[in-house]
Length: 460
Image 1 (cartoon, rainbow, N blue to C red):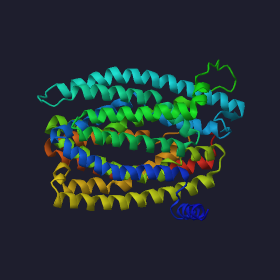
Image 2: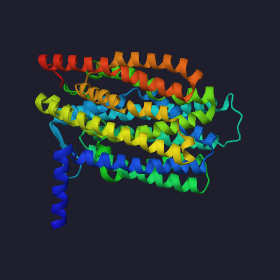
Image 3: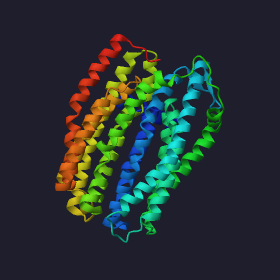
Image 4: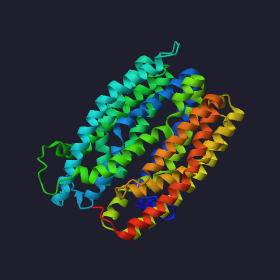
């Protein structure tokens, strides 16, 4: 008992000082696992993959990211609309939905549509991205690297992940954030360990495909074991003739088409670099930039936990028009996210400088100036992300045109700078454009927040 009491008191103190609740605790544990496992994964990649194979490894993920052109940001719509309906619902001890019948019917309709759409996306992804990636890696490349079978296996496992992903989004919207992220923690840990083992046995690029398979196997097993009854409820036929049924064109579409454009723009803002580097400067440059962005992404992933985990709760408070709680939570979470991102970025710069100075592995990363630029933009992107989460929780997407402008500027920058300057051009493009965008993004945020809460518009 004393140990439990001590742990409870420690957790309460952490929650009071830096706002770590159950959901954040699980996410932060997951992110910190990534911080420790990520460097070891990078070490294994640098040890057991050739520099050219490293380029293929990271470019694989940039091509897989093309799934945004099929998914169209529907995950955000599912989470936001689910959270608004779940404000009047709850899970019972058997993990079955109970509460207001109208909200339950609307949630059921939304869930079925999401499952059907993602099944269609999974099929499209397998054939189109699989074939497109094969063409990309084949044309103009003369290599002895065995990438063909690993690529097909990876596309297949990613398709399975797309198929089951709407179930995770629905559960997140039902405020099961801590539980969903506990799975992600366990699944990512298992996938990482398996990747290390496969790399150790010198199976090269097969490592990424096998680890993806482990991740999906853990996810499917978790869902069936924990929420098998809930999944059967979702799949149960429904006539959807109730007067309270969800009106897709009036309620979902106005938000969805805007979020779709923002999501598509996201590819050009975050994922376009490696394919261009791969084609213009070869797999070695793509590998150096990719592994550096993985390190930056690990820090960003930890920092964003303070805001991302709050989205379902923010949606519920908006539904109930409890804007005072919403704003206090937003300010607290955003400050903490920015502070963690700033400290993490500084630590990353120091770590990679030491790595570049004292080890040969440092040659696998971008240069010191490139690293500093990429780490410096962590805080601005955290603030923009927090503002986007807040506004989208209202089932609105006022950042759409900003995303379009950001994507156009990024496309222009990378087309001019990467062919001429390589990795440095990629780092400058990413840092410069994303830093500039914080000014219009924050202006839009304050304008919309003031306007929406003043008019107290209907977000039901």
